[in-house]
Length: 145
Image (cartoon, rainbow, N blue to C red; front, top):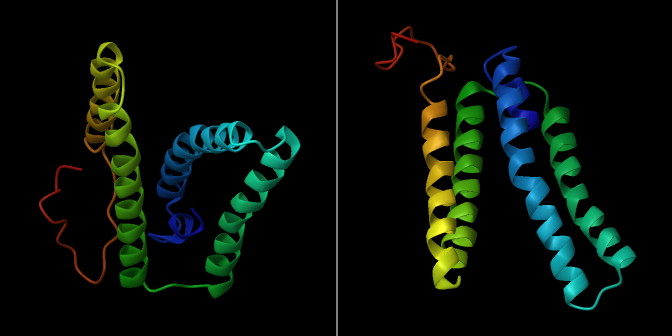
């Protein structure tokens, strides 16, 4: 998240969109983690404490990135690409197995919701947006944006 606010100069739209995407992922993920810890026998207070402690690593990452200062655009692009790839891998690694191990009646519903999420993500790409330019004026075939 911290890197996305510094990417593309002062373009806060990228930072906000990445923040919203991460929150949409993290809120249900943290609730699921909490429930798994409670079901595994942790007290609700200890499960909450463990969940908060593990979440603090995100703040550590933000502090590191923000303390570096200016990061070259090529490195920014690389870090953003790797991060989005990891999040996509996690989503597919967690969601697809859950769909296949669901009762038959709910399997179609879960698969449909998963596909709906990907369609919405794809449609968001159609919203006019800016690209980070690194030393050239070619917009890579996106001249209509």
